[in-house]
Image 1 (cartoon, one colour):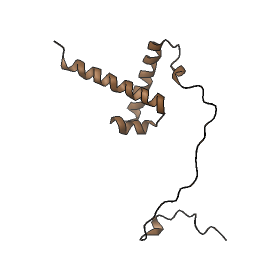
Image 2: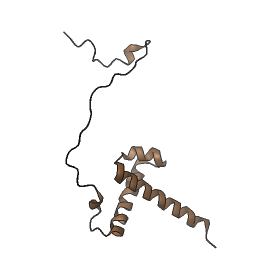
Image 3: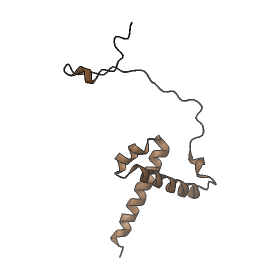
Image 4: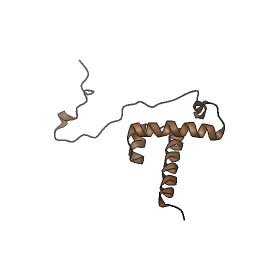
Length: 103
């Protein structure tokens, strides 16, 4: 007979693996992972570091940093300003100072 806590451990370990794989695949912030998994940001980081070391041992890597993607040569980021719809009332609360910049 298998204890029910055993299944809880398997599920917890699977969630830790998913968290690690998601971070390695998409590189979100730990704040984003906090919302996804319902745990604190610092605990997300702690789990990721622990699971990264375990994965490195399983795969046979000497250094867990080797799990990072090293083939990136160029990163392009779009940083253009996007217009934001603002309400007709109380516009001064949303004023960003960009309009009427001529002197």
